[in-house]
Image (tube, rainbow, N blue to C red; front, side, top):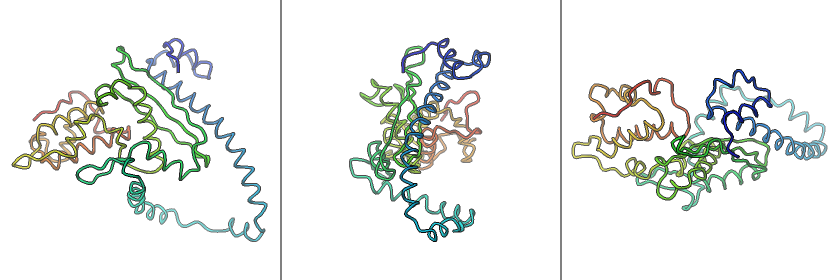
Length: 305
């Protein structure tokens, strides 16, 4: 997507039916996101319409081959009570995730020292293709290109129509702070990869963040391989990891400590195990892109020992 000024973005959105008066109060990044969403919607509707026509023809042929008795039996079949379905599904979700992660090859998953598995995007893509009849169409949209003005933050949305007609979408960012090594040079490409991974994970119902979403390698190491201090308390690398992720995600660490009953003692009163769980919780929020309102930063969010 070519770079559009704020004025250009407003003009494009007005063409799509938005009120110019309402748009004038919005900042450029918000306008860019709105235009990207409109573009995605149009592309998805076109792809779904094309695929729908193919599926409709196939379905018609199948239905014509059904006997009248079989068709009637299908229509009259009573669904199970919704409550029972939800209860069974809740119990199966964890098993399904474990089963899907087990289907990944050694090159498609990162296994931490504690046995936790973090899927890689190319492995998730293979599962999507196998389980949903391929990918009919896909479209990454660059919402924001990194520049000095925006703090070198790349934002990309990814939308795809699968071979079975279902639609998936994901959005992710990439910065110099949350990318490691050479990947910090290719922020837009990294944001696109993360957006794909998020879309695939949501569709496959996998809660574990992809390896590409994990951020700085030092943070990953602090989560997975840190040795506790002699008294079992949190160590400096874990404090640094919590501080970095919390600032990036916008989480109020003080509120997190209060939930753990550690507000008075501060972050230094956490055990190493509690620190690991807190870091994993923060990375879950980062991967999902959703933060509980009560955990959001209001004012100062500095981590204090």
